[in-house]
Image (cartoon, one colour):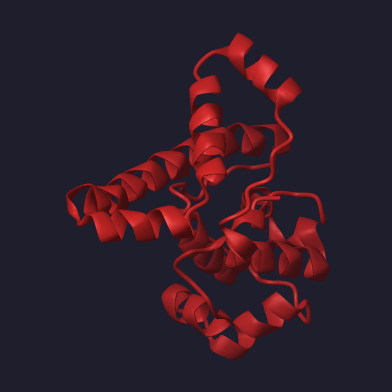
Length: 179
């Protein structure tokens, strides 16, 4: 389970994951979350008892389906995804097809948030823009810009992947969340 993305784990049935798998999926989702910072915040949002939720995060108990659905729903809503409709049998291939759509929605949301933040600097003072330049490395801006451009052409993307080995510098711990 260690290699699964946070969303793949959240979409699976808790009985398939086991105690440890549930804990790993929940901890990954909490680490990825920009809305929740603590288990208590998750339990409050999901309306599941804090100690019960904490036991799931720590791998002490396997989550029952009702609580699992409540807890994972708050994470999936943040990711721009929804709980899949009830189905008779889990299909990992179908779950994987949902991942690109959720990631694309998150990229769109991130770009919208970035646009809002950049508008502040666009209309701000020169001093504000100088501060932005000191805080955000120009190489990170170039990396993101070139990757976004490459993603809009498969040939460009293949070439970009071959020649790109840059690692983002300016984002700190948050930059490594998706790795």
